[in-house]
Length: 173
Length: 173
Length: 237
Image 1: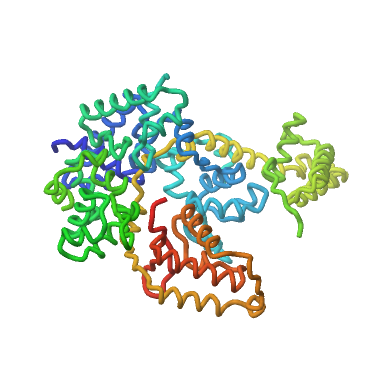
Image 2: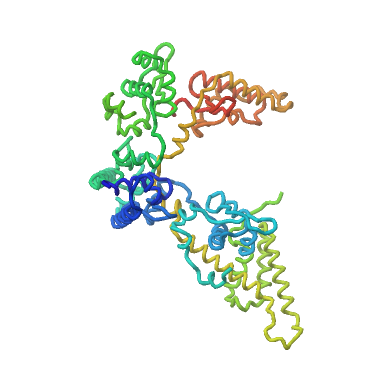
């Protein structure tokens, strides 16, 4: 397809969320996934080498332009916004949800040794955590897991990219 | 300033509206306007030559990344939304306001040969037209003119760049 | 009403305990319970004396520590049993697990977070498209009067008695409304009329709105009939 690289680039550019290969294929019509993927990795490499104000990153199962890591200070100066802050308590709660999902609140409470209601509510509001179902035990408590937004915010492609911790693996479930 | 080009690029990238030289200067601190302008035109040229999915354009007194004109069909396909639609009546009314501003409603009525209340209201709501004052005659009728948003939507840097009436009609589909 | 200060320094009793263990360079697998309990309670006292609200969990852990301490003081009943149960075992397990997650969370925090360290393209917001899909209808003075009548009818009787003549002039109210609109872009009718202004205040506000509409300085719209009435500035400031 003529100009495919430019088209793909423009599609990513206008997307609010990371753009998936499938979505691109939907727009382009009959094009091989492999072909799209090749174009995408070409672009990633090109922006990487250019080392400009932003780069193309594979995140949350899709592709998204993002500002270069070290330019964040300038952007913050422009936007004058307070960055999204997660308190240490929220970050810990999120870590437990991320590694133990699907997980019930009482288990998070137990691990953190505090009532995590407030932190959990904040994470739900920020759409980093969501309810994924109910555990099939008496009382049918709610199960929590992380969202696609969590992957997007933390620059992860999928959950398997979460850094593993030796201690965690040893402790197991 | 080291990396100024990348910084400027990232600032434009994250801006919602076209970014002005003044605003960039505010962020960068003590840098000559001329120096910023040079960097900007460098970038414009670079993107132009690259001929990728988007380019950097000077618009509404600032700079903004925009998808390449001829790729619009693909973007629309992705978004599945209709672009801003202006009825022929609205487009004509807008044209009158643009070319005759500041202008009173009765004058637009006269030129178009109909009562333009409805069309004018729509343009005010879309923020393409605004009230700019009152004419100093009995009844002190309201004067209308175009907005910054008008320049942005029609990709004009300033009013002197206004296309001819025929071109304008084509733009509005 | 108790004055509550959220203490962010410690993330919970386990965090405090870990801190004390680290500070005193204690081997986590062999915690001197008596010593650490004493330290822990001392910290709780300090926190309390600072008038900080202490979550119940801190006290729960304190009692757990005291309980373990007392168990360890008891002479083991059967000396022949070699691998006796260590009363600290559960606590140590819990501390290790918590410590692991604490490390994970610090790791997560070090990543390039979107909207904190990196940013995506600033799109011409899609909310503009949303806004265009709602077609506002300009409301008539008639509908304003109806909304006004409703607000007045819900006011309490004693508010009606209050008469305070020269507190507020119409032009003051007009200026106030214009300033608020310049700041907030659009306001609902009820926002502007507000509560707690008394009947006179409400009337003045209403008159100010009418006057501003007559001058075409502001416009009132609603999405559907009997919907919320929104007031917009009709002139760019």
